[in-house]
Amino acid sequence: MPLELPGIFVICAMDIHSHTFDRLRRFLSGALDIVEYLGLLIIGIATTVAMYHEVVAMVVAHRVQLADLLLMFLYLEVLAMIGQYFKSGQLPVRFPMYIAMVALARYLILDIKEMTEWRMLAVAAAIFLLTLGVLIIRYGHVRFPYNEDASEGAKKPFVRK
Image (cartoon, rainbow, N blue to C red):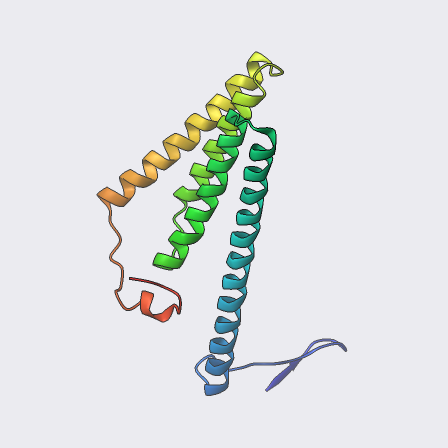
């Protein structure tokens, strides 16, 4: 039975167990999976292109600096994060935390001459807090492991086992 709101909308209540709702849910789920994979593909390609440009810049300059190596490591972490998602169908929250730690370390190393003491302490404290967060998450995974359903990964089309 449609629900009419004052003069503007007509909303039809749909039984969540209906066949139509189930088909709609499967369609939207598949569409979101496609958007998710396309987004990861775009991020992977963009990261690879950026890494290529960084290598070309190092070759042209005939020099490799610490900033270049740290930036390449950030690119590799992003690619590892994407690879981990395609292997397991999941993205551990630790990976973005690792990337954040490396990015903050890079910032600290490269801009240390222009930083005040308080800024250095703040960046170091942020790295330390991220490290504690990773340690707590790892401890939680060891102490309270997940009971994953083996059939869950089979539903994702690009998941390798």
